[in-house]
Image (cartoon, rainbow, N blue to C red; front, side, top):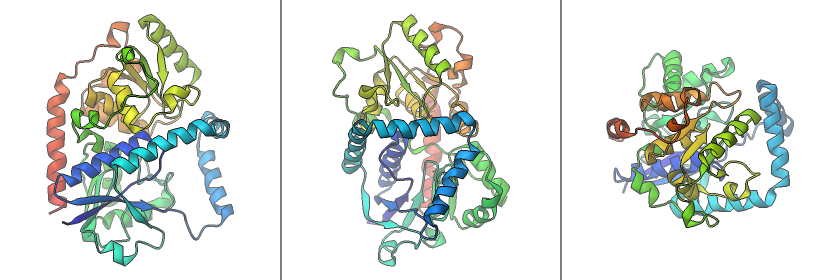
Length: 375
């Protein structure tokens, strides 16, 4: 059986990353391939400790004052909550060990050992923010430069930003021209590729939306601390960078008016909600009355599971918001942005009937793209 290697961001802390990784694996397996995720070690061997620190400081400089404060506050909180973080990490690792096939070796700055590289018919880079120069130390790995061009495929890759910094443009042009097939997850990303290379590329569904609802429910799991009578009787929040005070107050007032308790899945101050793995993430979204979120994957799973949701713009992250804009535009659900919700009756009522046909058509586009790329 021919083999495909997935190259994506690794780690045991981000719901969207783990779930899209699993979904891409299962989708590629449906084409008759053996599939595994090739682990990446993107530490720069040619960078000193002082250079690594300088890079991290530059990232902080590019943040707004409030953004920098959030990053520093999060790191301090993490130090004070090691036990909760360890429990949550274990759930992520358990999920990965059970559902995702990972390689025993890694691709590094030196590349991938030839004896391993030649065992793969293709490598697929995707999805997530694999081409975000702020996130990765060695972007060339995520453009698959360690293998020959005919094996390089990108599925719904994401830059996560609207513009490539000038110091990366020349390299990104070279990397993009070295890909055999490219598809993006956001309209802004497709525009970046066209601006840099002159080539138009398709915008395709995030892998998480390629699996159907039942496939996700089959691997969901009820959190141990949730009573059976809680189903459909709570307001769920999931904010990747945390809520500002204004948003927190607004959501509290909304929950009080709806007479719903609040579960904060991404907030380490709410230990019960925070200590959740990817399987619990699916269960929480499928069973809540409404989800309040600034997360792309929180939004995507709400659409897929047909759960009422409200989208908030992430503070100081306008470029990141483009991926949610693309998603809401695609599914004609811009009405779910907080600024477009005027009355409480709109909070818990969402018409998802039109999304079924859209999902069907978009999945067909993804399938056709992969059939050609894997020819």
